[in-house]
Image (cartoon, rainbow, N blue to C red; front, side, top):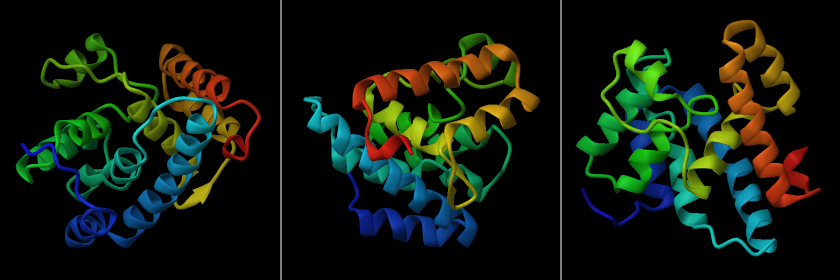
Length: 178
């Protein structure tokens, strides 16, 4: 695997070769919100990697080229590895689902033993931005929480809420929360 990040244009080329238009639009919206959030974090003194956030957000759903189930995270990570993408991108892809997938949940899903909970600020920013997008439309976090509350166990919903609180605590009262 290379540690050199693809450019925005290269990431978009990868998406256009493999994903449907709706996935590309979704990913572009997620990237826009993720960049806003990363810039807000920088204004608060955090040293995040804007390029990694943008490219990671663009490629976070590459696995949807093969499946639209929760497994798109693991499949996406495999695709990214096969393309020789950096480990930092692979980690964003496999850790963006919900507020993260615990080891016991991953085992139940039949996923390889690994870490599926966002750890770095870039992983958290992309995972959070993804929760603010439904289709290609920006939505308040409350919309996602209501939807997830109907579909997921309370522990999974609580991880999304924790991620929301963590990011909003970092960025304060800024445009990216709206």
